Image (cartoon, rainbow, N blue to C red; front, side):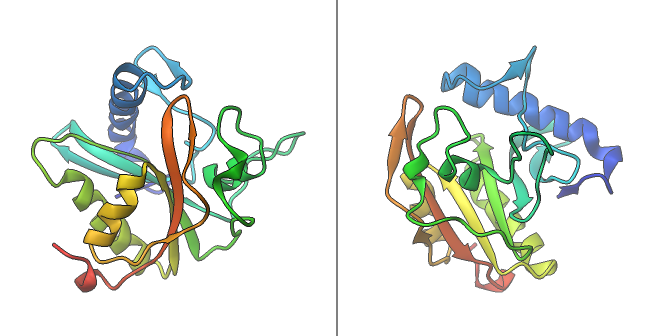
Length: 193
């Protein structure tokens, strides 16, 4: 768990996670995401972001990004909040605005998890990232977490013990099919191992 800016001494691990994201999302999946050299990053990678990164020494095995849903970025014509909400508001080019059936929340106790990516070998890395994310959110008193990913992501959450609620229909674009869903934060002992 790396909370910026408090744990800025671990920023090198965040940079390695962004390199990992570029390999997964840009190189392998061919998503048209902004990247510079070998790093993928965007407006949601800010100094108030929490990263959950699985690693062996400095080798990143996977990770995810956590954002509070009441955080904002920008003061100009476009003010960003978080990915699911901004897609719903139609300010993310290429992302379907029909992702959610109703406006996503703005609440300090609700967080968003995005950019989940993990190696397949060893198995279970993605699941461990979700467990650690839940553990962190539980420790800070968060009540819910919003997720964005392929429909299989919601099935994985169900297998781990969460009771996910879809926030809208499965939607698609050139990058694939996506689903936004919400889960209550669980006591860590209730999450399946």
